Image 1 (cartoon, rainbow, N blue to C red):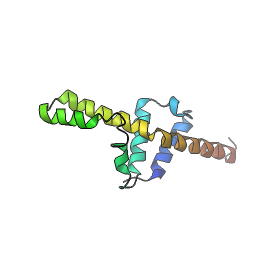
Image 2: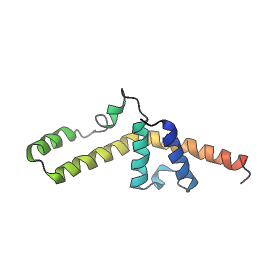
Image 3: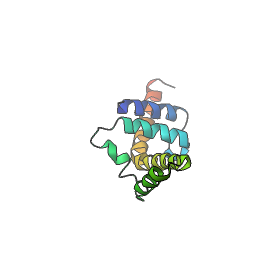
Image 4: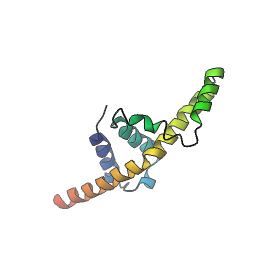
Length: 114
């Protein structure tokens, strides 16, 4: 399990690249930041990124269909849905971390006279 410190470091690197707002991140960067946030979450709340994030309640039906037909395409669709749901669910936390790191980056810049 990683710590939130790693998510902050990744966000700081994004800010250093000029990506200071969440909408500036591409899908890969959003996924990476979400993964780091999930990995830093305690075991009691980590399930929320799957269950609470499934706001359309699609996953149980997709899972039952996949178990019945074992379609590779459906399996990939389940994984894509999990990713999209988790990224959406973690977006508020990701925005908060980015905002913190913008302030940290500006402080570092001022402190280092850059």
